[in-house]
Amino acid sequence: MITFEGVTKRYGDGTVAVDNLSLQVPTGAVTVFVGPSGCGKTTSLRMINRMIDPSEGRILLDDRDVRAIDPPTLRRGIGYVIQQSGLFPHRKIVDNVATVPYLLGWDKKKARARAMELLERVGLDPALAGRYPFQLSGGQQQRVGVARALAADPPVLLMDEPFSAVDPVVRASLQEELLRLQAELQKTIVFVTHDIDEAIKLGDTVAVLRVGGHLAQIADPATLLAEPADDFVAGFLGKDRGIRRLSFIPASKLRLSTGREVPGWSVALDEDDRPIGWRASGDGDGPLRPFGVFDPAQDSLRAALDAALLAPSGCAIAVDPGGRFAGVVTRETLDEALGRASGEALDPARSAAHARPAAGGDPDAGQAAG
Image (cartoon, rainbow, N blue to C red; front, side, top):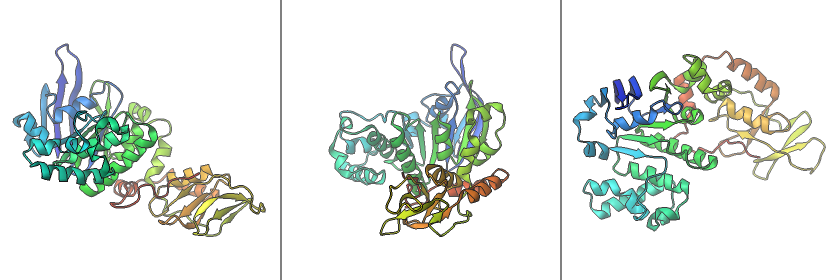
């Protein structure tokens, strides 16, 4: 556990970056620091591994003040991932990943074997091990950065806006990869971002900071969306926080119609019973129209709503974990579910479990297709 006790960071010119911050980062969970520019989130992160020292207060790592630990020793036990990956340009990928094991005195064979294992774990082709950073895409470099941070199996991982420099598609893929890894490894992760959607997706706990380094609210994502502490938090969450809240309501209770026909439309399937589109009723082999799917066993009400909005029928297609047709959710059923959701009290434990992909599962199952 990481504990902030009345931590303040004041610079020589009088600027206060962090002001009397007190909070706990639970062991084995993802805690996200989020807020606008100038709120002290990166400063708070960097004080954990003593890249910056606080002016007042204490930061405890498992009840030990980090200032009592030699900085290089402290940092070798904490993984650190930054925005631009920070890879050494003159070192091959395998040796970049093995950096900390080398510093810890591991022999080259053992360090490289660990690096190769981690490249596969973060979803990279081992054939990339002999390349240099400039030969990799931005997303691949970020995966290497994560692998390097995990190389010595540190219990704590600090991540400073690690995915903000890549395009949205790659960013979503990296987020899913982090959730998959965390389901396996259960690290204590402190993640910094300015993106509230990323914070809600990744965080078990989200700490919202306001300008000047003040803690505005700390809560699990479901509680944060349902019960913002004040107007600042509500404004930062955005006007669509009600839609975001649907991500924490499971779709498993939606009533399915097992037939493929709805008024004016029918679901077209391939030979393996997988949906391939909507077709207008009576249109024979007419053109296929856009569609969206969701898996009731693991997706949220937001995923079902998204699938319905993609379809000309206004209905969502449900599939089983193998992608085969399982039924249709009609607009009326969705309206009923949305009505219930508007007054439903969320169970944070249930919501968090539903929002995280299971270890070894397919994080992309149930995504809308079109």
